[in-house]
Length: 217
Image (cartoon, rainbow, N blue to C red; front, side, top):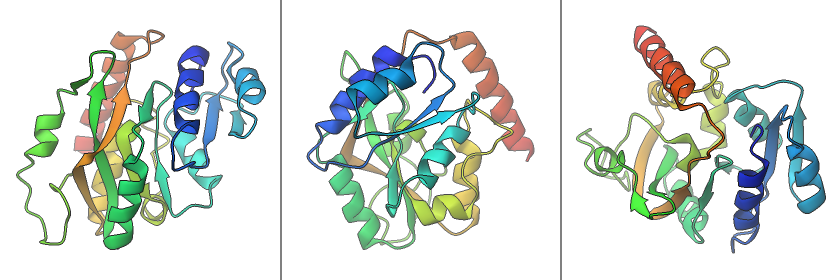
């Protein structure tokens, strides 16, 4: 997170209410709006890491290092998980040792409609082994995916050079190249209410750059 105190506090309230009671780690990318102080005051049980600079997506790598769990559910500061979805993810990852990541059905709030990307995931034409519990993917949605920590760390996590914007593309290709499978699951649900504190033009520019860079790599 960075400079999204209001959205982050809303997300933390939702995560702390989950029946799974997952350990939560917040990586604050050098916010200037009092985010870290607000988290420490209102959510003392949340692990708080104060980065000295804006690390972009690499902040997630640091969050993973701070956990001792075999799986990690990524969550952006403007997204949250449905009750039961993390339990479902654990069941799938426990049952399938070669499964590296599971991506959830993402709903756009406040309307509750499905994210426009979902048809591509639901109807993925990629070939898959019989044991894979859902459509095979070659890409994930970072804010709506649960990953096997061993797989994530094996491929080095998110790239420092890509920073932010479409950074999942290279990670997913690295996972596939290392023999890990990714799938989509209809029963897992995550919600996303896009923050108003963003520069959409800069994010789109960064995403296009990273897509081209990933293709070149």
